[in-house]
Length: 132
Ligand code: C2G
Image (cartoon, rainbow, N blue to C red; front, side, top):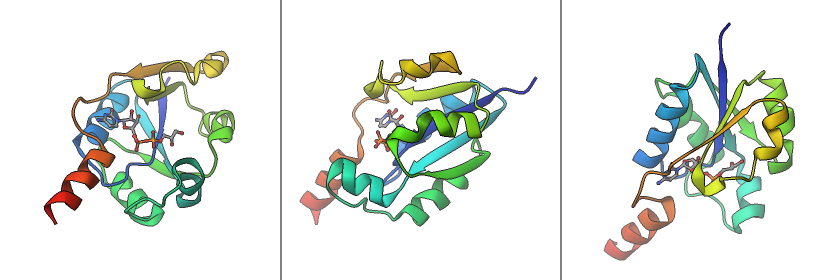
């Protein structure tokens, strides 16, 4: 039986922390599906648009070797629907989300992976702005 893993993220200003979580997620199964958050969702959630557009972020994530399929995550409230729709056996998130998705343990395994230390999109934007 093939095992499908699903993960979600914005993946804005794509960096090695994003790559590592995707690589480790892929190792937990045979097929990796990634939900990339919509621009509109980011605007609602973080109060700003991502640096890279939804189409650009989707294209970057879709091109990664460990990724088998991508889709747009339109709402945080649709997780159960996305897990079912993609027949995911495992939901993987970084541990900044630890405990937040335990409610889905009735339909799949839920795994939180340690974040890669010392790198974030916010820190990168600040670093780039400071050196401009
Ligand atoms: N990540 C990581 N190490 C970092 C930075 C990020 O492991 N140094 C992981 C996060 O834990 C997450 C993934 O990379 O699992 C994507 O991170 P973000 O783009 O910040 O995603 P976020 O905005 O938290 O969106 O439905 C959930 C949301 O779509 C998640």
